[in-house]
Amino acid sequence: MEKNPCDQMKHGEEEKHLTTKLGGLKTMPFVISTETFEKVASFGLHANMILYLINEYHMSNAKGANVLFLWSAISNFMPILGAFLSDSFLGRFRVIALGTFVSLLGMSLLWLTAALPQARPPQCNGLATESCASPKAAQLALLFSSFALMSIGAGGIRPCALAFGADQLYNPSNPENKRVLQSFFNWYYASVGLSLMVSVTVIVYIQDAAGWVIGYGVPAGLMFLSTVMFLLGSPLYIKLMPAKSLFTSFAQVMVAAWHNKHLALPAMESDPGIWYYHKGSKLIAPTQKLRFLNKACMIGNPEKDIDMDGKAINPWNLCTVKQVEELKALIKVLPIWSSGIMIAVSISQHSFPVLQARVMDRHLIPGGLQIPAGSFGVFAMITLTIWVATYDQIIVPLLSKFTKRSRGFSLKERMGMGLAISCVATAVAAMVESKRRATAIRQGLGDKPHGMVHMSGMWLVPQYSLIGLAEGLNAIGQIEFYYSQFPKSMASIGVALFALGMAVGNLVGSLIVGAVDKLTSKGGKQSWVSNNLNMGHYDYYYWILTILSVINVFFYLICCWAFGSSDNKNKIVWDEEEGTEDELELELGDHAKGVASPIVFTH
Image 1 (tube, rainbow, N blue to C red):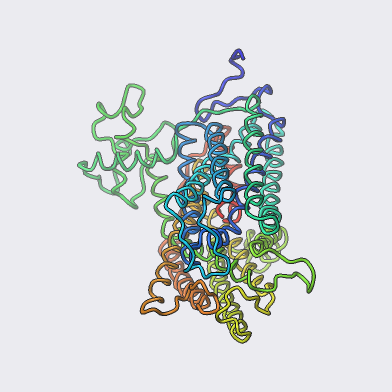
Image 2 (cartoon, helix red, strand yellow):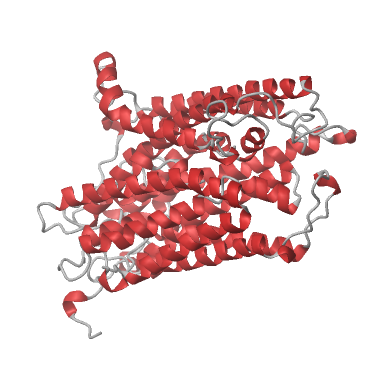
């Protein structure tokens, strides 16, 4: 097709495609259907995966949980890398296109592990897992390759899909543009929420009822539709070229500070002329906190550092004051960010509750519909959705009457309450498991780990609901807090920080399970996370999580005290440009914080 100057990709933050020939509402069916199919396909694989690893690959409960923790950690880390590649090198379209293809390849490999008997160790029905043949190295390589490819694919799709859809509609010359963007965000989040509900109910039910071949074939087919739909819309899309990445900016500050380490910092009161800043910037001198970074924006030799236009000759040797303060803002929130790691461990407890639910009475009503063991996570989603829907509309107006604050609870209070509720959730999980185990032993099921316990699976609902509420308070509070501390140009960093926290939480969760399994099985004793739930002590494992979570609450309080007040008097006045990319970033930031929960982004 002949290229027209009006139809070309634009470069940089201020150059956008504003014609009606590309982008617009006509691209929305392709963008939203792509995201919907991908979410249903990918999230539907996680819920029952622990059963697949135990039954088909003969892994122990602890090893299977560790594999899923590590898979989740990689899946949560890859979107950060995907965002960097998108912003700095490839652009959003190419990263999403590559992501959908790689995800399709990963799901196809996973389907092959179910379809080909040679891809799995031989069946050993009726025998204990310890007596079954272990998977061969090639079989594990195929399985883990599918996990890795799906994580890489998710890293391309998840950080870019929302922003790419907004690119198609962003048109500041249209007075109705804000309303159009608002409508898009609403439809986008509605489709994400619906697809997640479908993934943990319908897809899990298909896996339980029709087996793994069909249960994994359906997600692969949906991922194929996602890939096709996205590529079909290619001629209609606005495809912005990458601009400068914040990750690159942070790296430049650290490299420049190291390069200029020989420079002597001036006294507290010094001539602003020694600091490098762009014309018109409100930030003309750095703050005194983390002073060693100030060397990055310190002009050592104007003739060698500044060109004729007043710009830095080498941005890796000299950065602006704004760049330095952006990195400082990030470093300042890291202690509070670290307090979110432990709640990420609690939120990520998907494997063991599925094993508990599998041996409990899962009928919604006696003799009625039976809920699949992997579908109980829907109760956390429902609770989180109800919280998000009612907080602004009902809870905030009521609280404002008592607190005299227009936003009800402060962000720090919301995060703290989420941490506290996560302690209650793991304590409830410990008590429920203690009761389930005692009931199983009374029934004589001590040596029959797969025997059905005369106890309703609805006992698991409170812990899921509490975790959903903890997510709604802490996770969304985290992202809003980061957003309140950063300039609009760093809105996406809040989501990236949260994803990184989830990734670290998954790694910590894996370490905890491994340590508990190793330490409690010494001397031939029964491990607390034994393959036999009735002989193990999963309740003790949950109590360990509770104790660590309580300690984390006190750590959070110390971090809040060290952070200090976040009122307007202590805030930096950032440069906020009007009518540029910042407007879009603000829209994305405002709406991301409403749903940026682990349920949406990081299972």
